[in-house]
Each structure stands twice: as C-alpha cells, then as structure tokens.
Image (cartoon, rainbow, N blue to C red):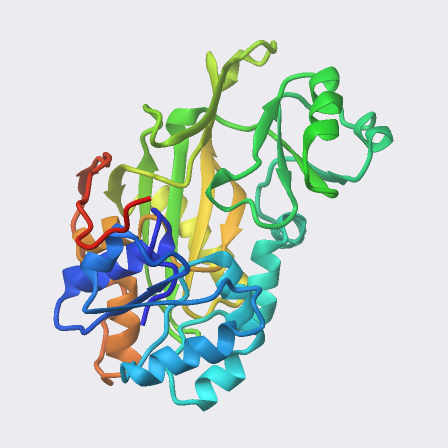
Length: 345
C-alpha cells in the first residue's frame, strides 16, 4: 500500500518504481478521490488527511481490507504520523520502511540538520534561525536562502534574498514564525540529489546521485539575476523545485561524502541528500530522511529502493552491496490523463 499517490510527490514515485520492478499488487490511497495516479495501481481508496484523528484507523482498515503486506508513506505529513505510530503499524503485521524517529527529526528540522553536519565535520552553508526583524539585522552573508525550519519539501516557501532590506521585507510576508537563513553556495550547474540506502537493519546497501539540470519551469522553483558582487555563484541564482531531472551515475566525489553522512546519522532505510559541489567540497543544504522525488528515475536504471527493501525484508532475498546499475540522462515533462468517471464540476 502506498499513500499520497496524487500530485507529483514521493507517493507517485514509489508507485512508479514498484511498477518498474513488476510482480506487485499495489494499493494506492490519497485524500483526493480523483487523481490520475489511480490508474497506476490495482486498487485505490481515499484516506483522511494526516492530521485527521481518523487517519491511522483508516490507514490500517484499508491495508487490511486489501491484504497489504507493506505500507509506504507518500508525504511528509504522513511520515510524521507513521513515525509516531510505527509500533502500532508494525504490531498490526505490516512492513514499514521507516527511519528511526531521531533520524526523521534531524532531517525534518532544517536547523538540526545543519547542527548535525557541522558537529560531524561536514561542509555546510552558514545557517541561522530567526524569529523577528531584530534578529535579521545580525545576518551579514548574502545572497541567502530563506526557508521554514520545518516542512520545506519541494522547496515550498523557499526564497532567495540578496540584501538586508530584502530579508526584512520577506520576513514580514512569510507565514512561518521561525525561519532559517542559509548562505547561498555554489552554482546551479553543480547541484546534486543523492540517495543513500541502508536496509532496515542499518546495513549499507548502495548509493546513487542525480546531477540536476536546472533549465525549465518544471524543475526551477525560483530564479533571479545575481545582483551581488559574488560572481563565482554565476549570473543567475536558482532554487530547484521538487521535480528533478538530469544525469544519473555513481558520481563518487559526492556520493562518498553522502555515504559518510548517512552512516553518521544512523540511517535505517532510505535517505535523500541535497548538495552542491563547490570546488572539491560537498556542501549539503538539506537532508530528507525518506524516499526521494527521483525514486522512479533511479528505478529506471536498476536502483529500485522500494523493491530492494521488500526483497530483502519481506521475501528474504540476498541483495548485493553496491549492486550494479546503469547511468544516463532522464528528462521530465508534463503529461495529460483522461480519468474515467471524473465528476463534472
């Protein structure tokens, strides 16, 4: 069973990866009864939102109704609930590929992520949390990226500021009460999204990287001309969206560092690390303790994280450490789906 399969998020990616693997009966769920991804699954049902008191009971009811063996979270909101209720879900007999609560918290709290990286000797952009305009006066590194401390997945509510005046104006407009101000580092053509996979016993399995192409409306969240004196950052300052594409390979210069980060963090399952290569240094600006928005892209090359975890833990198969996979360029675009039976609004 895969939740939150609608939209273009992680749930859809897991469904696509399992379809590529083949041999699975997939139950999909979403809060929206009309999603094109319902055509990708064998059974489809609706769930309440993750903050609804009925959510967990409904999740377990649907999983039992369709005889699911495993439950995969498709959104960060559901990840939090499933983490809090992981014992109940597993006691009900379902395989739940979920990182430990402390790993999830360290990744979802963006400032905790930076503290972890700094304390373990990894390169990070300068980062500060602020709660008011007075605190903004202390920021002296620009350009900077402004993001909520929690839940900025898909680059939601993430902005670039190039001066103290821009920062003060943005703070007055942002809905989040606590913001992280992070130094903008590196060029857009040196950005990577890296997957490091451990099994549910904490043993390293493999790693993969996608060298992002930031070249269109689909994969760029925000772009603005560089008006600072820091020309080493390039002519455009860019924030990627949650829809990534580009060239897939092992890229050992970045994956080796990310493997050490995952090991230090104590990962059980998947982790996705966002970084830029600045010279010979890997600067990490975000860690997502979950499956990636590029899960299906990786699966296209034989690096299928949901399938690997199912085969190792549910089917009892041996999975080779650093198993071989392909490399190549993948580009994404919009598609249209005619949904049978869609309501007339």
